[in-house]
Length: 115
Image 1: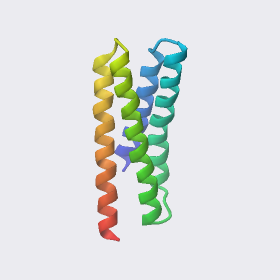
Image 2: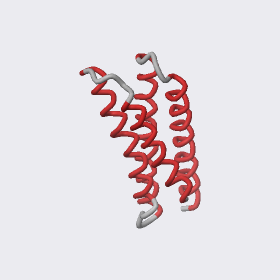
Image 3: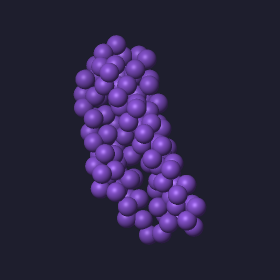
């Protein structure tokens, strides 16, 4: 649990650091804002899920984590296709978002099976 809490926060920080490297244009600003918002939401909502009041509350919060990780992945893919630099870092973050989605889905299924 603590490892995933740290991992989601690291994901948000690494997305933020990537966004610092993106040119400051009107077009890029829109994508950067979306990526920062969605990636930080992954970490914040995972943290909230750990304080859930019930299994159903936990599931609902993890669904938000799943959705925000998927949205982050979309914006990372968008950057990969439109931005010419940092492709290795973007690909690594896409892979990390994919793994966070898979972990969220597996956790949701496990808790649903239990209840």
